[in-house]
Image 1 (tube, rainbow, N blue to C red):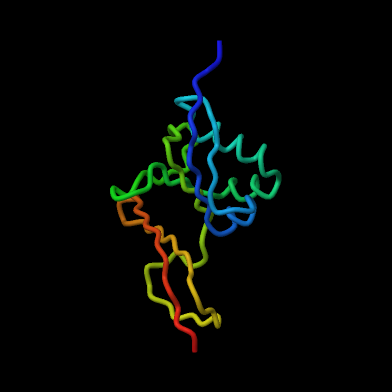
Image 2 (cartoon, rainbow, N blue to C red; image 1 turned 60 degrees about the vertical axis):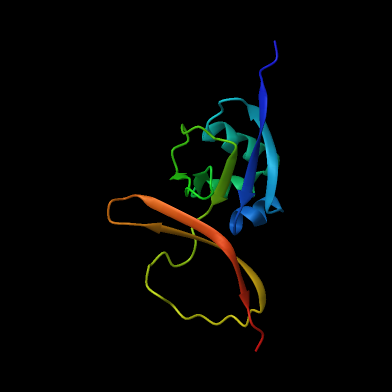
Length: 131
């Protein structure tokens, strides 16, 4: 008997995208798989660099208009869409002005934690003007 398989859409950000060599892909796993199974499949597929990233990453399950569920709990069900979010520099809600001499389009993913230990996340694209 063959287990039913589902395709999970995985999006990578920052170091996770570097480790995967891409920004997104579809991973086939058994229906009802948890994040531990997804993590194992990603490490098998992408190796030691991905394992290092995933050791500190959070997962945004079912991202979209409702915000999704941000978790590091590997027993959490994987869902049809999962964003892999490594830690990002900063982490403060304070505003910072940074100049890197970057122009063009930049992909953003912002994750915030409020005082009740709940998380929210959003992603988007920002266009930077040339100087």
